[in-house]
Length: 300
Image (cartoon, rainbow, N blue to C red; front, side, top):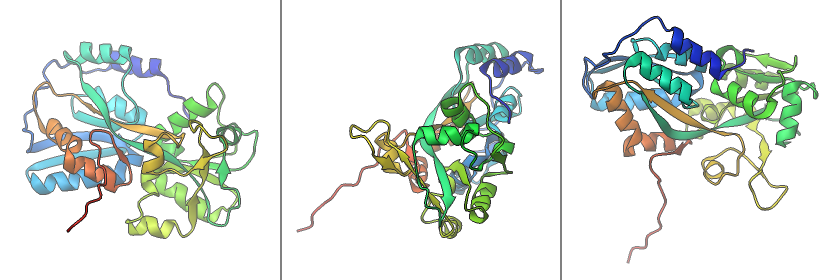
């Protein structure tokens, strides 16, 4: 697996072959065609966001490429890709480099919060993990097979490497698959393995495919490092992410390069307001722009 590096990303921006100071869109906030790059693990909810947006704006067209986080950032330096969705923001050097390259500073921010689910076979008796347990498996000191979407080098992989593995490398017991769906299929047929996927691939109890998947795999519980009471464990959910009880949560960032309102701004506004934020909530993610609370009422 490749190691992410802020310096490497910075060099990509510096060496980008294009140099346009005019990114003023030829489209409007509700019509036209733009290119988007997004992490593969974001595909379920991003397709739903675009589907609903297009239902109200039929003249809008989005050409979406799902790929690794590092490839999304590479695409962002080209004129053709207007918007990307990944799990991190830009550091100061990247912001400065992009500003010099484009002539203005792109905008970025958090739309919602996701989590990394730990998958085990439905018959597995090992369903409680500490962060140290996971680290030992990832570096190979515990030889249990670990599977993740390593071929796409998603933010999930980067987050696990940065937060748990740190300066060490993944062990030989870490297996790469082609996509998040392949991780789930692997766990179905390998009872002794554990897997890592974004929660939105397994946490939607209304999605027929995910309901079927959960008959053969289950999400393990992780120690709560922020709980006042020690020894508590939590599963990934909207509630545990919101309260900081689940330790492997990560943000969903948008990055947009428009110096005038265009179709990217239209999609961003949609995803930031009620309808778009409700889609995140319906996808069992945690909306970052709006808070939806259930209120009890009484009828006389």
